[in-house]
Image (cartoon, rainbow, N blue to C red; front, top):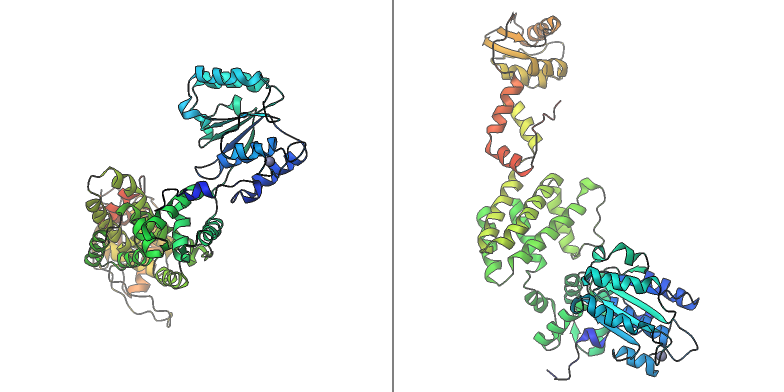
Length: 510
Ligand SMILES: [Zn+2]
């Protein structure tokens, strides 16, 4: 590569407000203020790295000191002596200070001592303090003193990635601007234009990957593009970018999720081996799988949103997700998400990512197969041989045999005798269950219940029952208590309970 190669981020640094990428609100507010002569003494720009804080600071400095007009202008010429010196970071009246290396109070005093002197070549003396949150408390105090009574010819432009660490006393004296994450579409347009300018080939799929990996930062995106150009000699396609990012193809991620949701453990683990051997970074794969789960959830029909407009998938892939969604519940997706989120720190801490990932996949498969807790409850409640209510001939019901306390519960439920069912399952301790005979204690002491149950049993089974209430507790469990214990003993339910801290078993049928 050419030794004079200028990195793209520097070469394509925005030189005026019009070319500032993705910061429309800021541009509009600032240009209006400058055009109407409302110049503040202090500005603070905040936002993630690479969104254009320093670029904006320099553009603002040019706007204040450009020689093409009599006063400050929202469209600095870019060619006058002042504009050029500022763009190169060499203007005598524009001081760029990196707070990270000037944290102490002595540094700050030294810098601020010069504030009182008038500017040499410009209208304003401009102090750009980058990463201002790094200053020490005493340095902040020194700065605050100057901000309280700034000379008319001085403008401070502070920039920070961490606004919460900047004292409120400082913030209250600054005009604040938040630089937003640059949207993927805006980044893509920007990168495509640069690629055209640089005469390099950049496929749309590759551009999409770069723009997403940039996560809102123009600078990060451009340095990735630099790297991709260097590695490919100017033919940047999807495969090259995937390799560079050590990422598995979205198709691969899709297959992986499909395999997990289909419950084929052996195939899923084989997939992981394959992806790992192809050099993909497993924590990136985890990120991609989380992204997939997030979008599958957003697109799930149960949410009625069906939002797929900004999903990073092709039409085919979206159709595939819809297909998978048609037999996957929202519940399963959100449980998968939880397990994956829990694995992120685990993956980072583990010395062996591969082992960690294998175990994660096994856990995910377990969850994908597991019915929701309320389903388990429902199934348990009707798992016993229950005779379906005969709806067609209600006048001559077929005789039913009921031979145990739990069968009775199921039969009541199946017959939609909800009041009897719930009273029976929560209040009745069955001491003895013989053919047509039940000996029980009624915790609720409701004589009417006995009558009603008796009537129902007679009608249902076509036989006369003998219901015997004891006066003292028989110290046996009610059906609900038994069921609760059985469910707790189920290893799948125990897993689910462990997964959701503070979870409780509730009967969804009540
Ligand atoms: Zn100029």
